[in-house]
Amino acid sequence: MKMINLSDYDHWIAISITGVITAPIVPLGLGPDMYICRESHMPSNLKGKFIKSLRASFESFGLEASTKLTLNDPKLLLVPICNSDEETVKNALIVADMALALFNKKYFSARAKFINWDRKLGKAVGVVSSKGKLSSILASNSSYGPAIAQPLGQDVWDWLLGSFLRGNLTELGNRVYKCLEWEREAQFSSHITHKFAFNWIGLESMLPNGEVSEAYLVQRYSFVVGAPRGADSKILIDSALKDLFIEHKNPEGKKWVKEIQNMYRYRCAIFHDGSSDLTSDDIEPKKVDWYYHLSKQLSMRVIGYAIAAICDGVETVDDFWGDYMLKKVFNEENIWLKNGTLHLNDAINFDWAGDEAYYEI
Image (tube, rainbow, N blue to C red; front, side, top):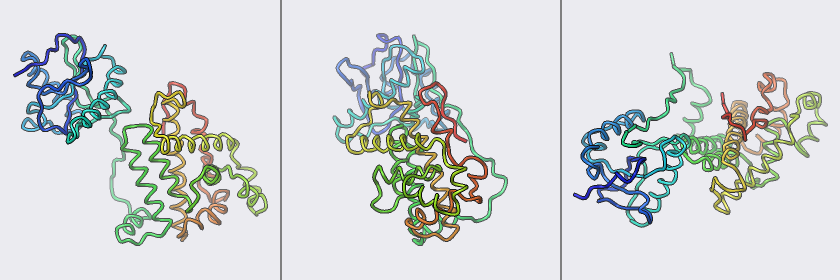
């Protein structure tokens, strides 16, 4: 059997892949620049140590590393790298994923992909070799969630699920369900541009029919953060809620308007121009990440208002954005007005260009 010569490379990564039943050594690129291979193609002095390291990687990702399946001469993408620091490995994985995409085009029936990959953190099931020393790529320890002592009673979330399954959702309930579906897609996407785009589709799904435009998105979502514009602002000034409106109007309203406009324009670039290049001169990766978190904050807040509206008997999207929101946002009973979180200005004032990661409670 032909063996792959690793002596030419001081540093390399081998990532476990699926979507190919079997393969010889398949060079990719013009160098070749990387290889699809199997563990059996590696030098004999590495095999035992390699499988041990790969098993540890599988287990850290919470995957069953079966000797009969995933560890039985596993299929790998081997990528030579210039050094083995975390940033290099992270960037190499992004390029390697594109290599698999091109491989799938060349070999039409192939569906090659990483078995597990956290794109944002730069972790995948695999092994790093640095000057002959093998290290498992380990998943980050990110366990979180509640420790449930006893189940809660039925509430509006149970109603939402039950009504969806029975086909009984109101128009507003159906929009909330769609928004949550897109939010879920965003949660499980590994590409930050896609995460933002999915969240944004969810925001658009909450609008009345025919209102997917920059002007309407600014009008609706600036209102959500306590910064109503135009006609909405005039209605509040002329209403019994005038004093509360003046007292609690968002002081950062102009910032929200500007960034909602910018997010909509970036959305258009993604959908109409196919812009997903995170190295683009037009928008920096950190700013895209910020946009994702802004859209997530808006999504959580509008869903919160919509769920409250459903509990109050509101059934249509037009009624929700009309009288209900006009009377709800600047109201003494609004929990977010009472607890001082109406404006979400920690998000809009976040220094996205800095080194600190955005933290959501």
